[in-house]
Length: 343
Length: 282
Image 1 (spheres, rainbow over the protein chains, first blue to last red):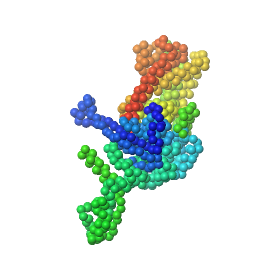
Image 2: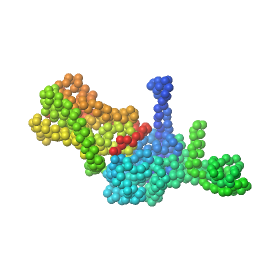
Image 3: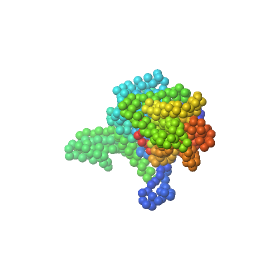
Image 4: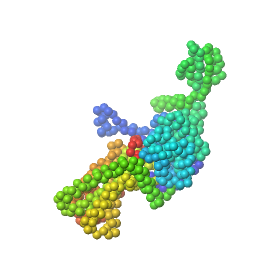
C-alpha cells in the first residue's frame, strides 16, 4: 500500500480513469440441512462474484457523473476502489493522476468521500468541533479553513447547527453537516455514495442544489450513486450504468431514453363511463378517470396517436410527457436481469 | 496542503485529540468525574489486593512489601498509559477492523501508523491512573531509598515505553484475526489483553521456572510490571540481562507488524462485508 509510484504515469486531463479494472469477491455458501452442515465442515461451498469485469471509463475534470445500476451491480465497489479502500484484482485506476491504492495519503487531500449511511462527524461533539478536528488532520491552512467554513455554512445553511451535537441532528441536518465537513479541504473530486438516502424532499432539494452549484461554479468533479433516478437526472449530465460488473451504458439521459425506444407517458382523461381504447396498448394505471399509457413513439408517432384519440368518444384531455427516468431504467434492469438469467 | 509529517504536525494531532478529550470532559463534568474516580478505584483495587497480601505475609517470593508497592506503582502507571493513549480503540484495534471501520481511516491523508498512534490520546479523562501510579512510585522509591539518577529515570521511561510496545504489539498481533473473521474476532484484542491483566500484576519472584518462563516467552504478562520493576530495582530475574524486555518487544513487534500487514493486505483485496457504526468516534 505504500509503494512509491511515479505521478506522471497517468493522464493529467482526466479526473478519473479506469482501465480494464476487474474486482472479484468470494462468498461462502451455507446450507442448513444436516448433510449441508457436514459438507460445510469438510469442503465449504464458495461462490465467485465478479463485482467489476474489465471495466474501463474516463471522467473529465468538472464533469458531474451519475453512477447507477441495480443492487449488487458494483457501484459501491467502484467507489471504494476510487477511494483507495479496496485493491483491484487487475487493471489500472487513476484519480487526479494518482493511484488511489499506492498514493492514498496524497490523494486524500484532493478527494472527498461521503457514504450516505455513514458519518464522519464526531457523535458526542458539536459540529464545529468535528470541523476543527478535520482542519488539523487534513492540515488545512487557517485562511483557507475560515474561507471554506464561511462558504459551506452559508450555502448549506448550517449556521444554527454548528454548536449542536451530531447525535442530536436529524438525518437531513446530519447529511448537510457531513457534506460541509467533506468540503472543508476544497476537494477537486467528490465521491458520493447514496447521499440522498432517507432524506425528505426539502433536504434532498438543498443537497441537489448545492451539488449543482459547486460543480458549476467551482468546477468540482462529482461522481454520485443513487437509486433515485429522478434525482440523478436532475443533477448529472452524464450517466454511467453498470450491470453485472460491466458498463452497460455511458451517455446522456436523453440518449438513454432513446435506446429504450423513446418511451412516452400519455395520460388520457375521460368523461365518466367512457374507457379509451388505443390499438394493442393496455393502460398502465387508471385513477379517477385518468388512464395512463406507456407508448413507444418509435412505433407509434404522435400525430397517429392524436388522430386515433380524436375518434375516441369521451376524451376530455390528453397529456403527453417523457416517461419518468425511473421507469426507463426499471425496464432496462428487467431486460438485463432476463439476459443474465438466460446466460 | 498534503502537509509533510513534521514533529509540529504530530504534536498538532495529539493536541486535537487532547482538546476533544477536554471538550468531552467539560460536556458533562459531573459524570466524567464519577467515571474517572470509578476507573481509578477499580484499578487501585486490583493492585491493592496484591499489596495487602504482601503486607500480611511480610512480602511475596523474596520481594519486600515496599518492592511490591514499587511494582504495583509500575503496573498502575502502565494501566494509566494504556487508558491515556488507547481511547479510540486504537489499541483494541480488532474492534475497528471487525466493525469495518478502517474505511474511515483510509480516507484521511495520514498513514495508518500515525493515525493509530495519535488518535486515542485522552490526557484529561484518562490520566487518573497515571497520576496515582506516579504518586505511588515516588512513595515506594522513597521508602526503598532508591538512588534516583537521571539514568535511572531514563531507564524507567525506556521500560515503560517497552511495556507499551509489547501491549500494542500483542494487541495488533491477535487483532489480525479480525481481518479474516470480523464477527468472531471483533473483541479478540480485549479478551487477549484484559483476560490476563490480573495475572500481569502478580509478583512472579519465588515462582517455579515452569510458571516464570512461559510468562516471559509465550505470554508477555511478566513484562507488564514484574520483570521491568525487578530490573529497575537492580535485580533482573532469572539471570537475564536487563535488555531482555527490549529484545522481546522488538521481536514481538516485528512479528506483529508482519502479520498485521498481511491481514491489511487481505482486507484491501477482499474488502469488509460488515459495517457497524457503534463505537466509532465518541
